[in-house]
Image 1: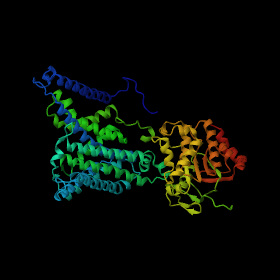
Image 2 (image 1 turned 90 degrees about the vertical axis):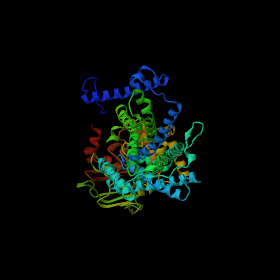
Image 3 (image 1 turned 180 degrees about the vertical axis):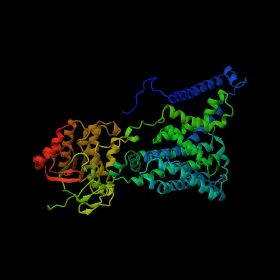
Image 4 (image 1 turned 60 degrees about the vertical axis):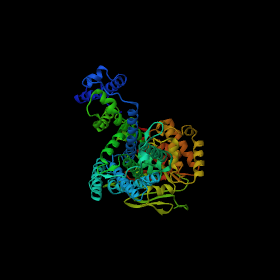
Length: 375
Length: 244
């Protein structure tokens, strides 16, 4: 046991005090924000709301708005979760964060753009066969993204196997720039639009009045995650993957081909990112060479929030992050009288990262690493 | 040379880690069904010997021979498929995987479903305690139970030679005794065992033959009884074991 036992008050540096202050501030913000929100929902004209809103009563959030926020959060979160899985799996097996993973997602979104437009020209997209066309596009996007991830591993990371972890980490940033610029070279720097989705998809349906596109995103993401879970937990290759993540030497002693297992890990992570890419395209209908950056960083955040290396955690982290991003501006910040809350989504996401790192550094579902794991 | 071909053989093996010369002209031969041990203190080259046998270290000169075939360049998986398995030092189970998954991974290269099932049953009857804990994470087991799982995992590969790296390391004395009984039990099923040990008395009491390795060189090669009676070994080596 090397954990230093710290006597209260003794040995605390100013940095420790600052971090405690930050913890108290962030948790306080959440508590006060929530209370203010509840009070505002009960009585929009309460004195606190009037004080934070320059004497005006606050806007009460309607049930419809609230539900809309949750669905938006879930659909975005599902995509973050899908991308986060790739970060988490690669970290689990190789112990470094593959920052180029967001680019795999972008490649998926770009492939989706090309496929969707081709299918639209052929009259399959907005016209009759939308669902088969989408499924076909998902398939192709998955293949292209998987291929990108596998080539990336082969060309950029395998030669660095065995070098200190910082080196593949820095390389991954280089790979990220390379892919972005290659896409700019091929397709130009401008934003590319997906064809419009058919009208019936945008309609609100079911008794919950959900938008069809978001239902589609959530359903496809859920199926993919279930498939991945089955693959990792129940198949022989999945078992080999978990074994390699834990102890490469002993895994090879079992006869497992460690290199091939690492490639599989990249492939599966890439496939998930590819699916997230096409879903992104369906939801926002636009893609640009830098599309991978922000969702990539957010998915990385989601992986950290859930506990890096933990697949269930990555999915849960993605959904929590997406929901927090969608809900927090209106539920926590608006009742406190913050202006322009809808601009603060990214700030919310990264504040959540800081909060998790301050309060539970191993992530929500992360396990405490033993000293030998950390070495 | 005896009539049978050795399952596993070292012919004039030399290995280096960078500029450091580890194994020096080592010759070993393990015949089917034997129980042999390799004795030696710290840094005598014991672990390197095992790693070279398994293909995790490539010899600079000399040949590793498996059933008469030179396998110097073959990967670990090739050798595992041909019947070599190791129970590593400190057991090294996959701690986050369940006990059953650990056992199944032992049979990773096998495709005979029925054979795997019946071998699982065989291991449950050998180690009834393991059967009770199948769905538990391997990391939650006690040291003795982990040793059973580690042996079970190795047996699932259907080995003809079982390499054991320091089987008594890190176990309570009472467990060491049980452990050596288990090794004998496995040996009685006709599996050759190559055991690397610091606990020379214990190892030689069950082994047929033994080698003594000192700074990478085989200094003694004899039957277990002869080694136990050898005054040099008693003085320099067994004496040390009785110490701290």
